[in-house]
Image (tube, rainbow, N blue to C red):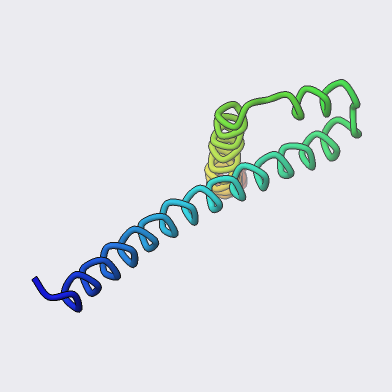
Length: 111
């Protein structure tokens, strides 16, 4: 095998290895940034809902990344449930108003 072929193969291997390393490292950086963001969101939630309760904030500092992911998924479920309840609440309110109107019409006709 020629020396230039060996150099090309070597350079190709180095490029492939460095690309793989960059992809793995960027995935870890993105994952770490997501965890830092989740921790910040949970701390902000504690500040908003519990008036910055120091014992709760210290607990948030001690939580693992998996615990924070679980808390974030719970908060997402609460938000989606809240949206569904508000949609149902509006339709119940409209239905109640319609029923009230029909009942008042019925009472007026009876008198």
